[in-house]
Length: 577
Ligand code: GLY
Image 1 (cartoon, rainbow, N blue to C red):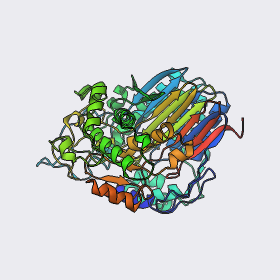
Image 2 (cartoon, rainbow, N blue to C red):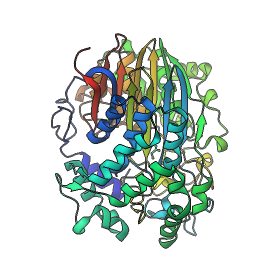
Image 3 (tube, protein in one colour):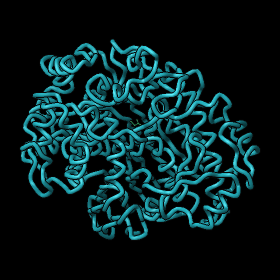
Image 4 (tube, rainbow, N blue to C red):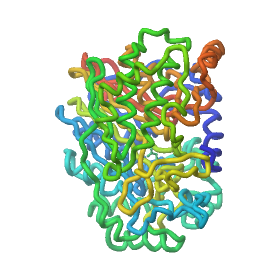
């Protein structure tokens, strides 16, 4: 978590948070002033990282689109107004529940055909600093152009042109720069300045655009128009693909036009499990998110987490002990084609029961006892963006998309106007060896051509009768833990939606062997009690930005954006039923 890029971002998030959606200003990581009430009404709901993107989704719902149409329109609007993570040059995952049937689309990036196991290592076998983070060598083959189109063409209702139109309008007519975008660009200025092709777009007059000014993106508008008219081939074939290859070659990348042509999104079976009376569907490999979510929900029921007091050490202790084990399992995971461990074996009841027996209520396990070989979780960027949608028929889409780091690899493709990802950094650069952070990952996630890099993204849909929840988050390795804690708050504590999203969170990821806690999460007495049980505790930061929507059992739609982030929640028809 300590690249210069991420450090700057971490500093940025510890400042003031401007919250739209009738929320309030939060200071220095405290959530105590956050609004407890979700937006509610009828007709459908959208929660995303930007008001203009949420509005794009709501407009599609009002125009008769279904949840898939609205999710794709929202994602494409984010590709314009939220360049830190919204994208055409990245990838993502979608969990869709349509007419009661769950579909899961993997449009994760892949290693280009010329990618090699040791491509980010020096001659001594050590990772080369920033090689997998900055510039086009860091870029995986983008999955979004084909993925979003596939999602729509399989399950959308409105025409493709209608769904792309709001994003074209935002890019063509312009959108107002928010304070958050101005700050993000300022804090990533060094990265964006490296490439004149990027500076020309995002540093007009050689400086970040000022909050309140109107930003127009003509090249991106033209790309979106072509995408609207011709579909993904407008980006993945012909002159556009050659423009991507040319800029990749110019800066030493291995991304080629042939990679874009060969890329395929994949429909997969979800990770689906029972959580008390709820059915939960989440993302399978190449995401670790669904497995970790399933393990947490299972163990929390077995350990009767909800019977422990909300404050005090017991709940945090039990969650941390479970997370320690879940994240140790993550070492085994990667692209499903390269992962020997089977997800169902990691979730099997006998194994969960064994974990329950191993967990003592009075003593922390040492992480070295959990897996003796000592491998650990690699650095993962906390950028990414999640959107949740419900339409008037209760159809649901949870969609998480990413270019990995804020502004991806920092390179805008000239003429096309979008940033390329730096998702190659989610591979293990040196399996079995410590990386530049002293961390080790498994061979299942080694760099390889055509392979999908392991992710933590956890788009999730849960339902009980007609009641439906849709949620997910950005936040790197904290995505599964943020998503899980909101689900625990809702299902085990019966929290209101916004309260569940707002509640302070903790995190543990096996290594480093410590509990991370948001500022408001643990009282000094609780920290003391946890330390007495053998935990190390680190306080600070904000974890995940969960955007969630819910259809209640009395037919009301609710939407909640996370006060930690720039989220915006809306319903199609606000107000009482
Ligand atoms: N790049 C963040 C993730 O895929 O989890």
